[in-house]
Image 1 (cartoon, rainbow, N blue to C red):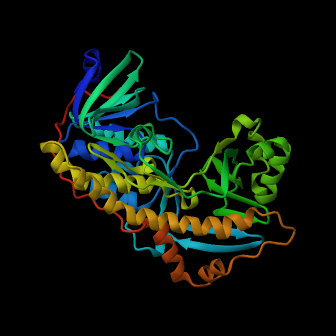
Image 2 (tube, rainbow, N blue to C red):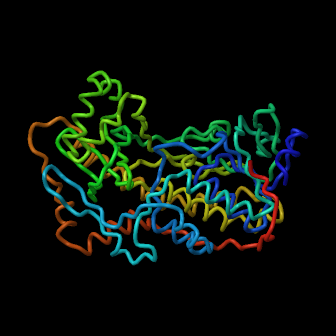
Image 3 (tube, rainbow, N blue to C red):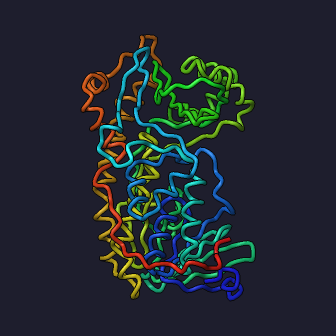
Length: 423
């Protein structure tokens, strides 16, 4: 399908319209196109370049890439590897997970900028003539026929137009226009923290410490080779209070937690260099309407605890393709078909969120309480550190997940040469 010529008609028809070009949307678009389904993916931005998005690719996602025959090319994309996860609780260093003990085929977390991950899927999707990606195109609402969703209203640089579809999939994140337009009810679970993301320059030092927790302070540091990617955790709603104390005070707190950041924290020159992530943990009670399915963050916003958001989104996409691809190839899917996707994915999502909430309530909340007493490691962390096989269990939950999905949707071999419709 040629996107430019189609837009002149101001109306497009397709089997499946996916709203949102994040990990869930791009993976589902790729899988459906691979299975021979006509699919249009809408992405409101003109490129994928957004800093401080989820950059962790877990073994479960690499297993999916392996099953798709993409893993060799995928691992050529520049990335950093993390296998053992250590943390400082006060002055005590403990190992909290060891991915080498999971039995995973790819026993490490790959740190890869999300824009590279999405660009990779875009390039692979271009092999299929039934895959259309529309960048700079925003969905503004749903098209309905009675109770049935039959497409989306959208806008781009040329104005408004309509996409008619047998199935619409909302993958447009935690602030989803699609789920709001559908009137789907959101269950808020809550989180005690927000996160301040920033980069700090790096010279030659290296340190494989993931979390740093002291009384009243918490930070995650990710070694990205040429720089540190840092997540400074603050109590919910306290960003203005942190800013009011001044940038120098903030930098001082950062260095007190991670002294190796002292040279590089000078890169934080203004508050514009610090990005606020307002943490939300929620989920839809119902992911579907007739003709509509929500997956990924549009169905369930995950806590940043464990960095599992990208991988849960990919698992949703794999499950959706497994359940729907064959039926979509021949026509519309029933609401019961869509409910089956929710049934398949709701259990692992709820278990993961429940574990995230336990960490939030018992570690993060405790760490963020002002306290003059030195922080003592929680008993569970001490036990895991002392028993290596437990490090494999914690790593398996984190890196492989609950009931990981495997690719079962079919593949239609693409033509070797095609003119790409993506723009």
